[in-house]
Amino acid sequence: MSARPRVFTDRRCLEHLAPRGYPERPDRLAAILAGLGAGGWAIDELPPTPAGPAAVRAVTAVHDPDYVERFRRAVERGDSLLDSADNPLSAGTWAAAWAAVGATLAAADHAAAGAGPAFAAVRPPGHHAERALAMGFCFFNNVAVAAEHLRREHGVSRIAIFDFDVHHGNGTQHLFESRADVLYASTHQYPFYPGTGAAGETGIGEGAGATLNVPLPAGTGDDGYQQAIEAKVLPALRAFAPDVLLLSAGFDAWRADPLGGMAVTEAGFERWGRQLAALADEVAQGRLLAVLEGGYDLDNLPCLVEGFLNGLAG
Image 1 (cartoon, rainbow, N blue to C red):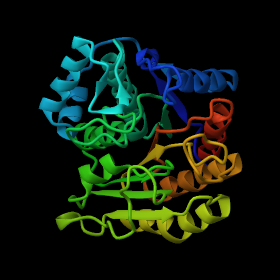
Image 2: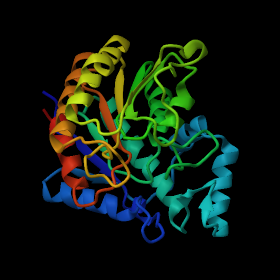
Image 3: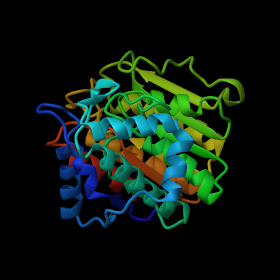
């Protein structure tokens, strides 16, 4: 049985403001943290310190340094968006993006040390961010940055990423699809934004076979997801035998999510947590890190996250 996950966050993640009516807004994270706090979860709030050298190394290993500088200058100039209307900017966006990275890396350090599973409660989310392009609410690809940090700072040689957000993680796939040391697996609604994630996308070059896409039709619920996870995802993760298991934890496959079209229940997310924790115990000595991605039903998001974390705790 896994230990109770430890939650890592940085309140500066709330400083990325959004226009009225925008779905990816500070209230998402505030609601999650309030719910977890009320539930007695241990929450590590990082102090507001500048990004350290390890974080900078990991970000610039994943993202083009020119893109990072372009992002900084856009915020400094007071631009209203970066690259896409899906990526509005505010005065606090730059700090929030680095805070999300910092909390994710602190959670990665916790998981890598064998101290138990960790959950990075952060925003902006990350899995749509490409090497040199912001898109889909994402600026820095937090889970990909964590993977590079684990490799560079902890000597981890094999990493698996399972992304269960309702949207395909195009950025994460593209960053690793030519590598054999990172397995990227995704269940997602298809066809749907961002248009990637067909079953035939299985990696390129040395990474051929290290990408697993499991596209699912709109309306898929607990049973359909469970069949896909048990028949395809868990066997692939087990066969790859990662040293650390990373999860892009999106909660927008929830049956009432305003941006998704799936029918997953709270029980579904909890079951996934149980199964993934058991697999991490089996193949990765329990080293597991989950990073918050999507989920936009503010009334239910805290319960979905807590249910998933209860699953991770066994």
